[in-house]
Length: 148
Image 1 (cartoon, rainbow, N blue to C red):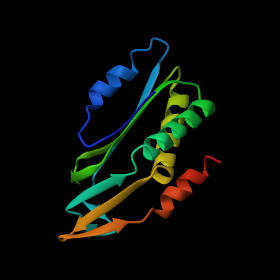
Image 2 (cartoon, rainbow, N blue to C red):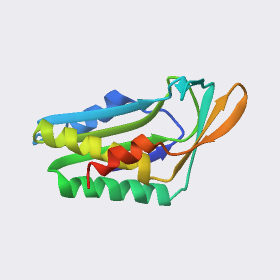
Image 3 (cartoon, one colour):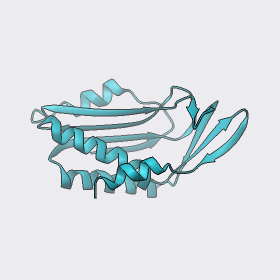
């Protein structure tokens, strides 16, 4: 299991290669989130992400451990970027390896749904030169409820 919070970009290919090294893993499922240019109809210039060092990594570990209890996975990687990000920059990588694709898909979706609502990250979007802190989305809370 690998958990990282970092400013620098990541290589999807490198992370995939590491997840597929286990010969028991017949499936690798990945999710990559990117900075989009529009949120709630407003054009975004850039984004800034903050986090709570130590607490954020602990929350991410707990989320992945819960996914491991629920699903038969071989390995998982979560990388989340912080700092200033431009449009189309990668923000988050979630990768899961498992013997079978169903478990890998479910675990990957579970991890990203809980990451969006449980991990302490704060997002500020710059729109027309002004920064605005973004509240959690109701749709993320709805997505999380399906796992209860």
